[in-house]
Each structure stands twice: as structure tokens, then as C-alpha cells.
Length: 196
Image 1 (tube, rainbow, N blue to C red):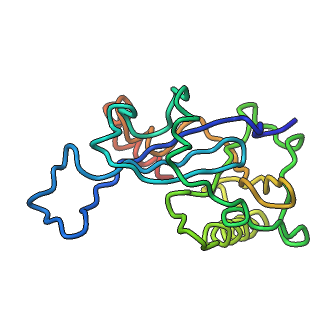
Image 2 (cartoon, rainbow, N blue to C red):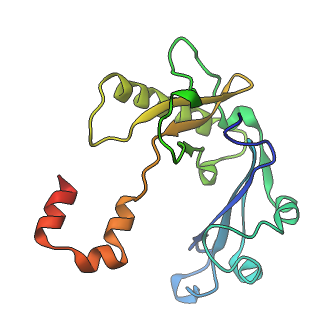
């Protein structure tokens, strides 16, 4: 059973407030200027890039994970594909743990952490190096677990490369606890319990 199907698609958007070369901050329109930064996956194939916010915000009205993928094929034509060897490191089997779905008892399935494509720079393999270093850190945590650190389940390997890091999936994030109703219901004791 594949964790990420080769045709599984995702689009993540983030607004980037960046001045154009030579543009002064007084001339910057915070409502329309800047860029939309895209991180796009189809299985383990990846694309990234930035487009002008003014031109594309109407097509992509909100940041974050996109639920409407109907313009996926159109979008990847304006983004740059990222070679797999630049974002996915070779799997050192003697050093890292391979994720085995049958060992995961969490009914929600694992959280599969992918490389952050917004950090990709043409021709460099920094993302692959970062992912390998992060996997090594998680391996240290696996050998000396701590209840306040995320449970690492291993590396998802495809074609002898580390393509995702499998972590325990939690039903609520720290951000969830700091938002909306949770914040309204917070008492001093609840805050102490949460921090503990």
C-alpha cells in the first residue's frame, strides 16, 4: 500500500511580501504587491515558483493548502520542476530507519513531512542535504525518545531516495490550542497543563 500515490496532488500557497528591485517601501501596496509562492506536488514530483500577486490572486484567493485542484495542470506550466536528486537524498540504509506502515498503530495514519520547496534554489541540492540532516536528528530522537518531542516513525523511501519523513500525526497542533475557542476557554490551570 503506497502512502503517497503517484497521482496524488497538492498545492500550497504562501503570500510573500517582497519589494521589487529599486522599489521603495513607500511605494509598496500591502494589499496587492508581492508574490504568491507555490509548492506543488504530484506524488513525489515537485514544482515551485513565484508569481505576481496582483495577476494571480483572483485565481488563487487564499493562502495555505488548496482544496480546489482543478487548475493543477495549468499551474505547473508556469512553475519550474525540481529534479528529484535536488530535493530527495539517497537513503543510507545502514544509518536511517525505513518507515513500515504495518508498525504504525495510529488510526489517523502518519504525518508525512515533505521538503519545503520554497527554499529551493536552482542547481543546488540544499533541500536534499537539509532533509538528510533532519532525518539524522530524528534518528537521534528515536534512540533517546522524549514525551515532549514528536514521535519519529522513519523515512519513506522511493527509488532508493528519502522522499518523506514519517511522524506521528496529532489531532491538534499547538496553533489549534492558541486559536478560537481554546483561547477563550483558557484558564491559568489549563495553560499550565498545556505547557506541562
